[in-house]
Length: 262
Image 1 (cartoon, rainbow, N blue to C red):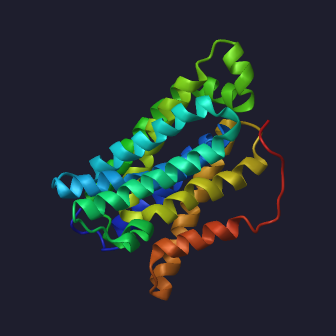
Image 2 (image 1 turned 90 degrees about the horizontal axis):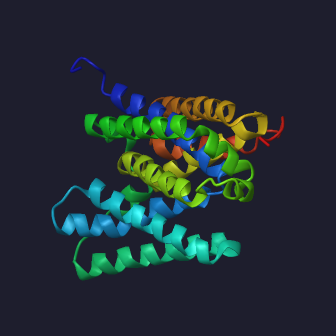
């Protein structure tokens, strides 16, 4: 392991995150919960503030507060089902406000640039292990709940009528998404996590006739985007995170082809 070149571990991490985030992002899109990922990514701030003040693991604090924000949004959505986006954005704003207030009250400092963009080149074995754990949990969830995910994604009302507990399924999805987001956010930042969750999934769903096919395509696109961005960063001597995010944006400029999952 010590013989690996300095760029090998960050590259492995980037490719793995590209595949993992894109796969989970595909599920979130079909469940109409992609905004939830944005909420979770910003909802880590209160937990980070408390964890830093108590000298605890920031990842644990971020996971707990990100999950709390997601679960709060899920609860409020049940009462405001026709205003889901407004509810999620309101909880997101509240989580950010709470984080900023806690930083001031606890007299702590968080590098916002690092939180937004991360530093992929500093990724270590701990980051890789956290990502592998998140990937394992995601794989178990998707494989064991594949049919309910397809059913609730295509026809949530019909799934509810058939006895499927859609709300519980989406709560578990929130837990899995939080684990995925927090496993990556320290190294790649909020911006890149959101880009990898969204762009490859949008492109993959244009070509897919099944959820499994869409997830496979999205993972390949996300991993390829991470690989290309990392390669450009090495050649141009630029930070890899913003380049990967830029490539994700370019994906959406490609001509729209194929048909969506239905």
